[in-house]
Length: 412
Image (tube, rainbow, N blue to C red; front, side, top):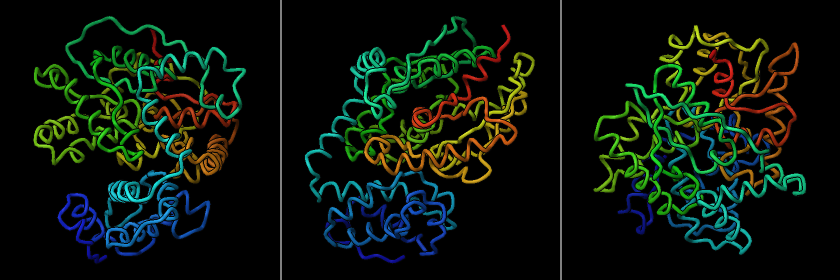
């Protein structure tokens, strides 16, 4: 796809990157078949191809409007279209560029500005944990929509105290420790059982995705630099073999630090090293299975498994959790249809676009409920905090991280 950038974008990194991405576009439309919002709305402008044309027009000098902004806002950034695309179009990077340009040119109503500010400042804030604790204390009194965002209080269990020669760093995340603390503790216990010690750099915080994808890209980049500073001493000392992510949304972001900070002279090299050392927890499973095989008693019933978009489309990791858990004796079944589609969580999307988000959630829960045909699944498993909370808001079936299941099956 040929484009002629407007003068204001011709010599900017964003314009040059966008132009390179647009050259790969061939207008085939394969992506529309796997786009969740196009599936729901049937509008070309609510699919990747239409959004690409909107961004192209803006880069060529057309003035964006609220309608342009609306169609870009409706994108989940699930990157399903990237998995489908035969030309390798990096749609996720392109939509980040387009959204930021439109955000700078199209004022939002006060209500939208307030909601977005509250999310980008509130979720990574140290005040989030006490606010969540207070919400859990009065959860039964909360309105239904708010109650769905406040999971019941969870016991985390013990963090292992043993030291091992093999060590990894774990990013705790900004909301996960408050909403589901057992996920991090279960991760540490499973790794401990395999002879791997889990370290945490307390100065590390939000991966930067929340601010970056709400168009506060400088704020997001600042959080990324802070994490690199927190992790770098461990890397310099050669103390850890990798940085482990048990939230796939954080994982896909940290794996892109090298790209996002490539023009930062102070951080480019470090960011690339950090991205190269980052592993989703599922990527450790092939190494863990032989070490754990005789130490687990697998649950007998079948479980439904929802692979998050950030795992299967963002990180391009597909099938690993199901295969490796099967090698340990567990039965995880993905939906027979639409396993590739987003559940509607998508970071802050479920808050900012609740109607579309709930339609996608209910659609996902239906196919997950049918994954285990002989009886309902014992639980629905996933690998990202947002997906887990969002799916749980629409079902009585427990929704959990797969590592919690593995942790519970460990023999003492």
